[in-house]
Structures are given as C-alpha cells and as structure tokens.
Length: 243
Image 1 (cartoon, rainbow, N blue to C red):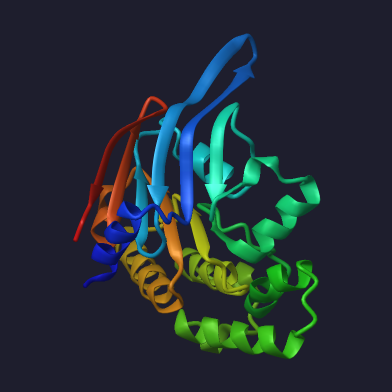
Image 2: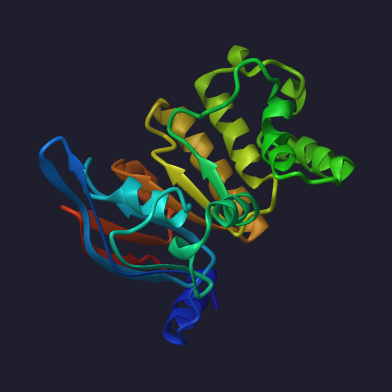
C-alpha cells in the first residue's frame, strides 16, 4: 500500500491529523466586509504533500494562517489531532507552533545578519530547547541534506534565492514538526531553481514523515503533490488525490 493509499484509508476511518470543519473567516477592510473563507471543510489524515491551489484571494494563505495558529476563524473549527487550536491561549499557541509546525515563506523570512546555521537553529533557541548539542548536530545534518554543507557559516545575505529557500526548509524542520506549512515557496524562484527546491522539500519531508501543505497558484508545483485541494472565492471547489 502506497503512502497516499494509506492516507486515504486513514481518512475513511476518521483519524485526521488536521481538520477544518465549516470554517469561515471574514474581516473588515476599510468599510468593506471581506469573506476570506466561506464554510470550508476538509480533513488531512497525515503524511504526504497537499497543494492548496487557487488564484490570489481564494483563501489559501488564510487557511495556512489558521492551521499555524496565527489567526482564528470567525466561525467553525480548526482541529489538529482532534484539538481545536483556535481555543488555545496565546502562550499555548506559541508552544504549539514551535513544537508542531514548521513554516516556509515566499520571501524566506531569514535573518540577514545571521549565518545559515544560526538561522536554522533559531526556532530551537526561541523554543527554549536545552539540548543544544542535539539541535546543532541536526542543523548541520539538515544543511548538508539541502546541499548547503559548505555554506554552514556563510551569511545568508550572500546566498542566492534558491539557497535561501533551502535554508528556510532546513529551519522549518529543525524541531521535527509534524506539519510544514509552505506559502508560495517557489514564487520568487526561476523554473529550474523552483524544481530543485520542490524536490528537496518533497524528499526531506517524506524522509521525516512530515505532512506538508503548500499554498500555491503555480501549476508546476502540482506534480510533487499527492493531493490537490482547489479553492475558489473562499470555498472548496475540488478535492482530488493523486495515487
């Protein structure tokens, strides 16, 4: 049984890692009410790479923000392993993000004055981990896996865009998260570099048994994904598995 077939079977037995249940999100933009999500429901059993596909304004990034406990729904539930994370207190949300979620951003969000190594270990330090030798060793291992073993002590502001995104992937995985949320991770990369980054992200996350959600409007991302959830105008338009 393949990873995706196993994921489908788990879904059928109702054991999701992630679940959105009738989630709506609205906010005021000036005098205008914006309905970013309008009753979206889906389950992610765990494992695999899922694309959240759709044009700008379809609700992709809003879903990532909700799953990362960076925002709360207006109505509905956002569940991780059965727990509604929108009910967490502020300090609990921070702990949840640090231990369970890894983030990969379109603009990399690296600290330019730090080295590649220092950027990768930053989530471990901010989380107050005391096992410095362990996470330092893991950072070196991750940087070697993303092809930056020779740039460990190089300042990130001297790296190319593709190299910066590889540092961001290593940083997202430093705390061994169960979930990686990637928001348009290839948007600022050329075709060949984007392909290399997607291969690294796919292979590393499969090795780490990490569930990945990629928000994108780039159709070239789709061959790397096991499932495609298409959004349109804040609603779920299509949900398809690729087995």
